[in-house]
Structures are given as structure tokens and as C-alpha cells.
Image (cartoon, rainbow, N blue to C red; front, top):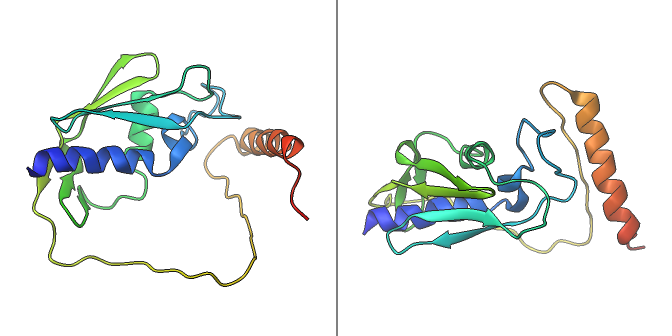
Amino acid sequence: DHDRLAGAVVAGHLLECGAQVTGGNYSDFTAHDVRRPGFPLAEIGADGSAVLTKHPGTGGAVTTGTVTAQLLYETGPARYLGPDVVARLDTVRLAQEGPDRVRVHGVRGEAPPPTLKVGLSRLGGHRGEVVFVLTGLDIPAKAALVRAQLTEALAERPPAR
């Protein structure tokens, strides 16, 4: 059943970047406390629908706006290709069901493509780097938010030496 599979694939796409669906990449970053956004979870129905939510008391928010921002993140045309199904993003419907509860429904699916791209990686040592790219308006406010997030996180767990 392509439609039910497509619904589950869309729920997985919404969860894959963690706290982005709770406001981590939302343009209205001042609307909610995103210093420590909660991780989202999905209540997936047998019909392929899902309710996106988060644990009570955690930061961020689950709204149709934050879910839309993540739904469109790193997607191309209206078809989201997967090995089991193609999810039609132009059929996704969102409904705010309550505080921090967004229903995702109406997703249509199609047969999977005959081929897909695969990315592979391997362990190559211990090196890490982080780059923060702040775009759009309110750059000083965004930089202050990143500084506050890092300061709080590193105060609890100092970097390994």
C-alpha cells in the first residue's frame, strides 16, 4: 500500500533531523525557547497518518510552521524518493491538533524508482569541525542564540581533551 508507506516515510523525514521539527531551523526563532529544543516523536497510525509531538516540558514547539520548515528541508521536487515508495509531498496535509501536536495526513505514495543514489562513509580518524552559517535577517540575534546554546551545553559537559 503505497499511501500508507508514504505516510511513514514522511514521518521519518520529519524526525530525521531531530530538533529541527521542534523549531531548530524555524525562521521565527524568537517565537519559542529553542535553547534546548525537545526531540520530536511521531505517533504513527495504521492508515499512514502521524501526529508529531514532543515530550512535555522540553523546549521548542511543534507547530504547523515548524513541521512545514522541516518537511521542505533538503527536498527537491514534489516527489521524495525512497527504496520502498515515492512520497508525494504535494499531497501532505498538516493540522494543528493542540499544543505541540501536529497531525500529518493525506500523503499519497507511488511505486519506488528502479534506482537510487547511495552514500557510503568509513571511519577515517578523529577530526571534527563545525561551521555555523547564519542567514537571513536578525543575524546578531541568531548569533546570540547560538552563543547561548553553546555556552549552556558546554557548561554541563566540557569538551573532551
